[in-house]
Image 1: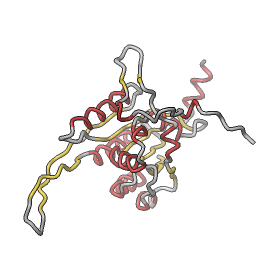
Image 2 (image 1 turned 135 degrees about the horizontal axis):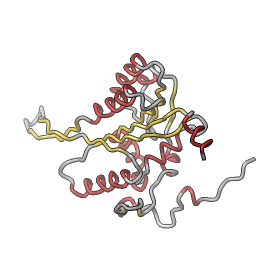
Image 3 (image 1 turned 30 degrees about the vertical axis):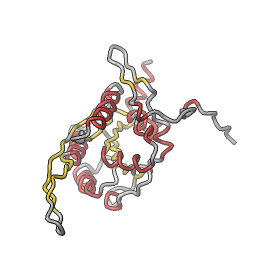
Image 4 (image 1 turned 180 degrees about the vertical axis):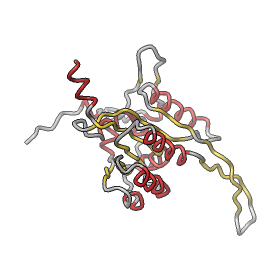
Length: 231
């Protein structure tokens, strides 16, 4: 037991930082709603090289969309399920921005997400400044986060930043201009990380998967699929 603990302490500390809306839209474009019921802690554990790193934190930056109650209920249920897996959710907010049509002069208020990108950047900075993490996995294709990557390289050159592109999205070349490390997230990564129907944790209230995220009938979860023989 002591030897295992000592060996674990020699591993680099890794954390995954998730741009919630960037990932959501990428998964939504795949057209398979059940992929949204994803355990981000498990996803992170799949991404990191276990021989070299140990997962210490997962941060999910997002915000509840206003005006659509059913969507908010599903979103909150995911956040509750993630909390049972020690995933920290940092919530931003939406504000209304006045939009206008140049042709008909019609004016309306458009909900615009705020603070998630800042929350993401500050999460990386805080963990680096406090020396809580050695390897930072940044899951986004948002070019705005290139500023985060540039700052991390300049301020914490001893830290390792890994660009993680959402499924079906290309890496931000601006982010890659500040790091040579990258991982392309795939649909298989998501499928390997799906929550079960009922998410449970000892001593805490269980969370039931929204029916909108139910997989197709006869769907076989990745861990239950026949293992391919190694050649």
